[in-house]
Length: 257
Length: 311
Image (cartoon, rainbow over all chains, first blue to last red; front, side, top):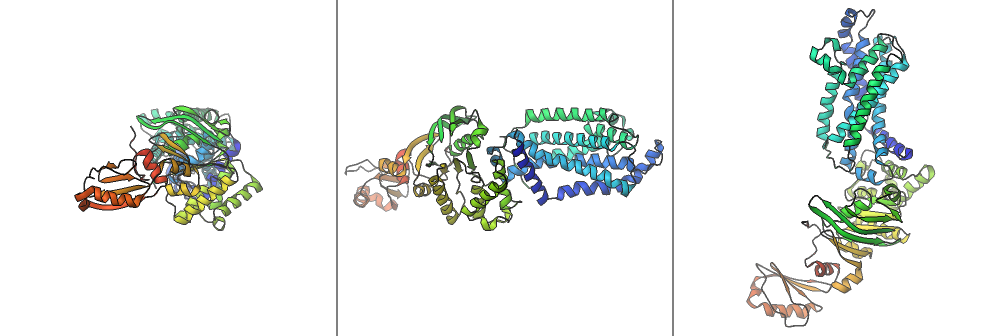
């Protein structure tokens, strides 16, 4: 792997992102709006669960952070499909950048975007929604970083499987929705039907929510989130393995839009 | 600079290359000439490291491109057949990316971006979005991106496809200039006239095989006598030639007579076809050039857009 070539791809992706910031704006603004709308909905539930002084933000903010990170999984994929559409994919492959340089250079901005989206939401929620993070902020950062890595590794798997941008849109939309809802980010796991509760732990978003709720509500620190973070990194490793097995750099992909 | 030996490539049952050999020396322009589907793009993409051959070897600047593709790619500049630019960033940012990928940094990178933009008349457009350029300007940017790092081997795959006359002339002039500076150029095209203008060596490829190679003048001298073509309404008649030389060839409604003296040949042919003259639609003299050489080598007229069916 060449750090220079990887950095060149990374910088270029940032230039593209700057030219078309609509995705970044969407994933940063929308969770704030939805967290504000859903805050009161969760207040009663949290109080009933014995969370004293709950404002509802204790669930709404982690929930929206995880949900919108999941909804954003298409972004990393489109970074690949765009190049197929613009005819630049072959040029990149013919350059001195290795396949791994291209992959890391394209996925890293998406990881950064997920990370910024979640961190900005938590930071703004403190003054805007009265969120009180009772545990350790480093533990919160480690958890959201592990989630960002995991979801974007999953995005690469979806990209590897999709042949057209239309397929990627469908996979990312359905995948994001399943990850957000069944992972317990939209509705607390305890409020879901039994079958959904049983299935929830097979999703990385479940573990992200467990880690974040530990930190926000139960005063958790780095040791407390070790389990959820390990689970997220485990998922990341599985997705990375699947991506390495399935991703074909010489496979033509069809992009429209 | 480039040595290709025994290259074979199939896509399933479709054979794209059948044992192609090729050499390009520093400062030399080799035109890879053939109709669509002849195997040109497959050959270029294998040299560029985008596809692996089923058999054969590729050496770029002495580097085994199949064993050490990254090292070989550092010597190559590729402008693929399809336009490949980033429309939502500027011309400068497009060129900067490919310069950075080739390892250029700082002042050297800025200088090269400026130089290559000037060479392709893009210097006034450096800060314009690539998507806002005209078709010809986009094609020039597409080519410029392959040149930023001064490649020792330049692979231009149908570089002028779809370009306007002015852009085509500029690109051809640039290719000659680059070769003059010592770059080896493999220039894939299906425009015969361009090859003649380039004054390049020609490798004539068809159905995945090299049919002929050599300088344009040499190929024309060896294979390219003038031809008189008579086109009929319906099947061309059978005539026997009483003049010295090759016998006429029938190809559907076309009667083709190879000749060094087109005038007397036409007069003789009109007499020979007799009553069939009533069905005569056109008479055309195809002068000795690369096209007639192609005709002599392949047995059919050159149709740039024809799709060759591969068995």
